[in-house]
Length: 216
Image (tube, rainbow, N blue to C red):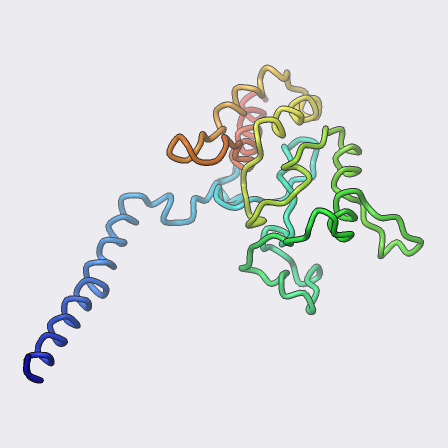
């Protein structure tokens, strides 16, 4: 093939790729966004006042007995405040995700799970298991260990079940009132085969507020 033919072919390929990537693909994404506005806007879950309470795709910390607890996060769900952020720890920069990658025998992991006593209060670590025990929650694997992304918004059914009695007592509910909500916000395996069923903590906690407001 001549140089002119090669140049013509290259120009045609460039034009085709430009149409695909600069016109067709953006238009396709725009159409998908218009068809699914909830997902396109980050799957935001509102509170009772209609204000954004968080995303159904990203976990967050719940410490009150009135709410189900999420699993721990090595990145604080990518939401460190200026006061909490350690300038020497790049893992605390917002917008990041990821696990600690500590080996099971790593002392830092054991301290995070079991706690650490120290004469200096600044060096003391409460530990996931003592914290759960103090809250009256039976420790389960996903309430002790972080997820691979540290952003997982789900807990296992087992982790939800061990918290039902605690939440019911705090809200003056019957456990039988909470079980249907847990089932409602349990998502099955991806495509029916991948992963395990998980309970979306934010959606469940929001539903608890709705139920309590309806009972007043």
